[in-house]
Amino acid sequence: MNLLNPFTFIPLIIAFLAVVFFTPFVRRTLLGANITDNPIVSEHSHKQGTPTVGGLAIILGLLLIVCIYSGNKILTITTGVMVVAAIIGLFDDLLGLKIKEFQKVARNISSGAVELGRLMLGPGEEARVATPKAKRDVDELVKQGKIEIIREVPIKSEMREREKILSQIIVSLFLIVSGSVPFILSGFNVGLLSIPIAIIGVVGAINAVNLIDGMDGLAAGVMGIASLACAIFSILTGRLEVAVTFMALSGVCFGFLVYNRIPASIIMGDTGAFALGGFYAAAAILGDVIIFAVIAIAVPIVSVLVSLMHRSHIIKLPVEPLHHTLQYKGLSEGKIVTLYWVTTLIICIIALYFYKLL
Image (cartoon, rainbow, N blue to C red; front, top):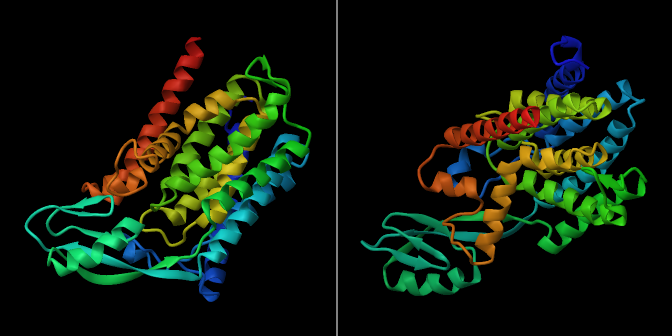
């Protein structure tokens, strides 16, 4: 494969066109079934009624590619892992259609800062009363006249964290039982250590993609850029089957972005986020491009690390995850998404440049 040969990008083009074709059909079906978003963040209220579970279009696009390139073992196994991941993500999406509780939204009406749970609200600022501590604080603060309850928002049901991690480990087991996970990774004979590496890789990638899937076009754009970079890296290192696999993933991401960019007319949901993460991790492991693949998704990985530090009380975010903190600080959704895209692109270009030097 030659980067200057336009035929090199045929898998990407086919995948792109397939998702562009399938997405309107999926969108109409989801609207008819009333499977739509019900955001809990006030800044995202304009997304009310947007069809979710749009990841089904991504799956259809990749299944078409695997039919065309049926002789590509890496693509076939990777797509199988993706389907398993998508099914588990779909369970979470369908569970999210059920309302678990209604949470109060409080506004600071005092002239000074007010501590509500783990948050420090400035004058006029709003926050959901979500944590146990916040729920204990709120009544007393209302009595003191420091805050007022301005509305209630529905909170979706979802899998518990432990259940999510277990389900993601199950996804990794499908990759392991395929018998295709190599014992030699990045030039090192890791032997049976390849099994925990595969588990960590799949679980980590799914969580990374799922975490950044909170703004229009954010996850699709980042993963499209990272996957294209991995495809180019695979071509440069002579891994042709891997290159086709990542080209396909990049194509479906960019195809979905046609409808998912701001303002999104469809949302991928956990169905799509789990599918992208599972596919990306499986392709990186089977294709032995783990180090470059990790570098390419540095932005989602940093977001995960920041959230883990917040949950461990090492740092304190006003809102989690990181992209919502940036929005809380005044950056618009469009600027945040562009920042994530551009940062990912720069990291990938630098990584490819240094590979060529070395």
